[in-house]
Length: 52
Image 1 (cartoon, rainbow, N blue to C red):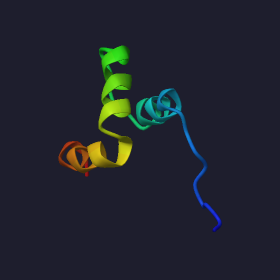
Image 2: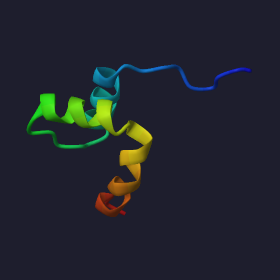
Image 3: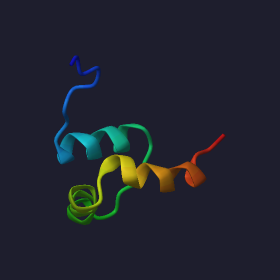
Image 4: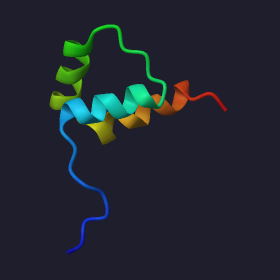
């Protein structure tokens, strides 16, 4: 099976989110949420905050 997206660490995922405009006040807490809940599960909640 060919993976189209490379694996990213939690720190890399947070850096990507910040690069895309997410404001993070508490980086350790943000990393904890990513580790416990997951990037894709949290992404469902971010759609309501997108600027269209």
